[in-house]
Length: 285
Image 1 (cartoon, one colour):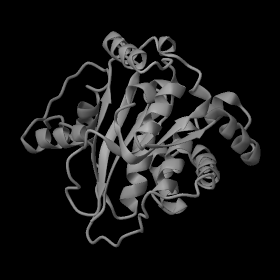
Image 2 (cartoon, one colour):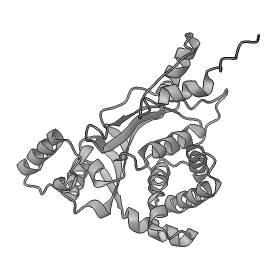
Image 3 (cartoon, one colour):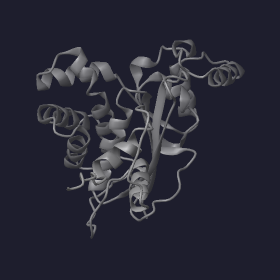
Image 4 (cartoon, one colour):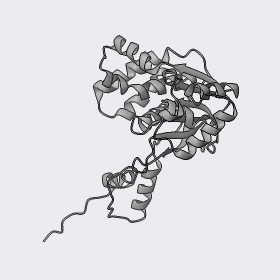
């Protein structure tokens, strides 16, 4: 039986959801099931970290979501601090080594409660409250930490594929992280490409660039924590998020009118309804 718990964390609005969609679709395309949930703070309420946590399995349902995961893809230093206790012994955390010097006070959007808890934790152990100390603690708990210089790596990959704009390179971060993670799972590169194409829609040039990034990033991982071999699955596979399921349930229950305030995440459910609800026809006289 295959069961792998995972987490993808990063700055809200910087591609965490896109990365999770890429990851889910890549693994799902290989014949596996995934269940998960996304967590994020409202920027209005003053939070900037979001993450997706889930479970991969070879049967449905793949099991409940664990408190600690086997694989953590941490896109920034804030994510390392937030999830310092959330990777199981023997698990793997991929992180940006360029963020190691940053201290707790660098993450101004972290909740006061979390900051105070971590300050106390580091002080009691005589550690500096830095990302580097957090990584070293995780390592002491049996977590395998794989640090990559994300910005430098993207710059090097950009030169190979003919993209040098810093703005464009920063948009490849989610693809870089997903490709590193799926390579650790032993997933063939072509499935990552399927995830990229699904997540990015009809932007053909952008899709091709991201596929090249994924191919180059996959070469950076030599080890595996598991070998997810593609599986033959009978029947149709569905990618469906919870908001879409709620929207479908409303329509099936007879709802024919939806109004909403346009802000994430309240828009997800009604936008699905907009696509699926039958438009009323004007009466004929």
